[in-house]
Image 1 (spheres, helix red, strand yellow):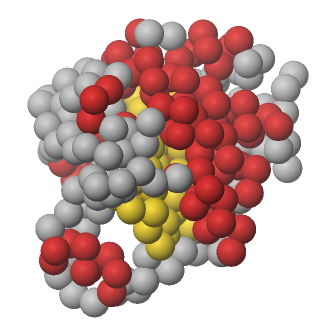
Image 2 (tube, rainbow, N blue to C red; image 1 turned 180 degrees about the horizontal axis):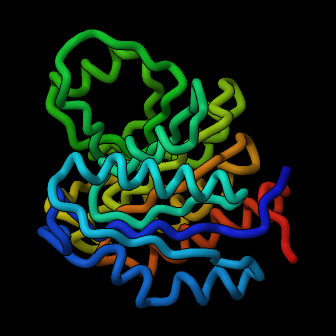
Image 3 (spheres, rainbow, N blue to C red; image 1 turned 90 degrees about the vertical axis):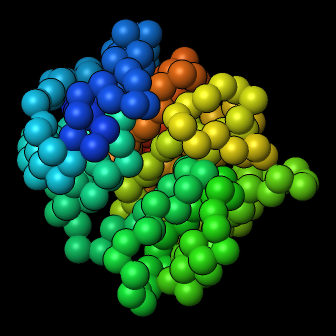
Length: 249
């Protein structure tokens, strides 16, 4: 059943500290007009959640509760964050037994725990800033990767289309870290890396996702290029309309 509103979950915390290190990503996305942009698309932005979080792991149950409340009300959860960890809380809050994961990220963020695991309904787009050990861990876990390549151009849209056609990632949690973009757009966080997606690649890819698979949430992370984040989120929401996931009033 389509929903007709989003819930913006506002989490400006990194390692449990408000507005720390990666700077004001959620604030910038919010202040530069994400609510107005969603209203322009004729969707009701719904509620905005914010809470004081004392330590890193406290972010997880807080995010879980906010996302779960959004789902219970029949709205689409949109999480604006300063830290990738919120995706864990979001996944739990969706209360889906076997979700798929579509990750736009330069980093795999799989540094712990160090034991074998398998997750073959997980796809990375733009993954490239890794040690050999990190890269092998992703391969061993049988995750699908559309690797960024510092030595040659990658057709991310074509590769993503193929992968989303070949494997079912529904219901998918979509994670957008703007460091998946090429580093010449600016320093998104402390870990920029060359040969990522160009803006038009990102907008086309994020727009494609709802047309091929059923997304159930979006988490967005990034600061210095917040205007691109707004354009990417808007492209994603427009695709939700086009596919009937979201219904206009």
